[in-house]
Length: 313
Image (cartoon, rainbow, N blue to C red; front, side, top):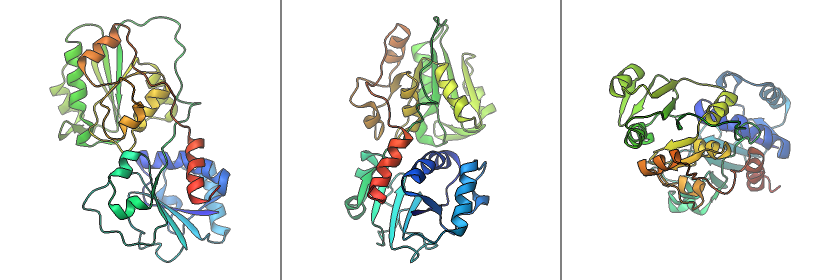
């Protein structure tokens, strides 16, 4: 049995936890630390309510996993556990406080993220990649052709490094006119376009091409998977990723990839001849396909790797 501590339950961090926790629970059993309360977690599924009920009557384990953006043991749990694992999905920064000790292992989602750590943390680190639900994210069953190339980009977190301006610029360079369309999925109606945080109405005064559609706001996992399947190409210009979950989902849905192979994305692309350019995008319209040879790992596999680190199972 292990305890789970997190203060990060929104956006992609919340999504990752709701996917990996039930799988990890099957392997080694999970309860929540006392400082994790139901009020912190929106839209709680039934299994999560059951986990909270079990946590209320279980003895505290000796092992705790701290998930999110922590790089030291949070003061709220210091001294509670004999073994602490920090599972950090955020990007390392030189501004992170010096390592204060008390951590058995640091867990990160990519080898690129591992390489960014300071020497002491890197020596204690291991890599556990995020997964994809391959029952949900799967290729479309095509019965006929489409009129014009359908291009998609997806970002679940708004930050300047996502470079949505480069995505739009690449699309317009590849297709100044014609029947191709671009869909831009953004987390809300206020997001970074280039280096500027703008509202959707302002972005539409900049991007006036009617072939480009912005879709703001949250959608379900099933709706997101269907959105991938409605498109042919995934166009992505992010400057850095600690993993790149959107690229993994696009891979699982069988889209061609026009992606910059930078940071952790290079691991996702597995050395395939995939690059971000207008020429590559035009080639997709002419029938070229730029894909990886394998599918991403599943959440079950990700949880198994995590359990091997934490529980030795």
